[in-house]
Image (cartoon, rainbow, N blue to C red; front, side, top):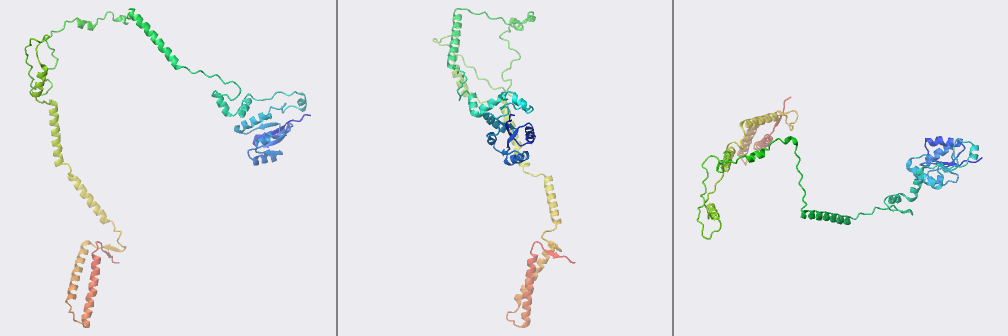
Length: 404
């Protein structure tokens, strides 16, 4: 009985858990297991009773008992492992007959068939050996291998092409000049005209055949001189130049008029005139300036009466709101003394202070009796009390404690 090849499984997913029992049921031996991490590979190897497990792909491919690999991992890693397996001849289908549904007798009798390799496997192997850079250079026309590089398109010589084009144009121009000199003129092609206008007469032809008006008559719709100058007297005309007789040496026909000298003299004597429209514009600007000055003098900068009344009303309302609000500085259980009462109390205190000072000054200086000393001390005590009261009532706000 021929032994089946040993299998190395890449992947630890659910498909690997189903595949390993199937392979063992058909007689294959699972020799190695690969996982992304060492823990995943160890866990599945212990469940499936696989002796060798690893997280390195080369360890599975180089295992001495692995002759066939089964790959069930994401595509980025699949390509790398496939290239390496192809290089070693261990990819699935690269061994003799691997039919899982055949018996042992069929394995002994059936001759080995060719490898089951997809057409793109050779290209993947070649790309893995040579690298992606070599393929890009080959696409660009640079070959690194022994095969012949593709032929490049020869660059076009624009200088020769331009010279050839110039010679052709010169040759064609010479032929045209030669035919023109020989008098070989081409007849002009008649313009196309619709047959439905054959019986229609030309209006231009009819106008040309009419007799022209006399040269002395002037059409009525022509403008007359100074018709747009507005009302008023027309500007004076400049006198025409005087005709002078021709001298004996004068050449040609005509009158001897020196228009240059006449125009120079007229330009010096001619008054400077302004058009009617400019005069009207000046008058309008003067009227606008006068109106603006009158407005600035009488109305500009003055507040209307209704706005003044509204401002006074707002001020009174603000003062009323201010008085109606309680004073935040007033202590609890007190009330503010009215202003007139405060001023009246302050004037009484000032009078009492002046009276006490007068009595203190009028005391005899040499009086040493007990009565005189007691009277002096009483005046001093009252004077101190009055001064303290004056300080209190001199404040802008005086608060008085309310009765219980």
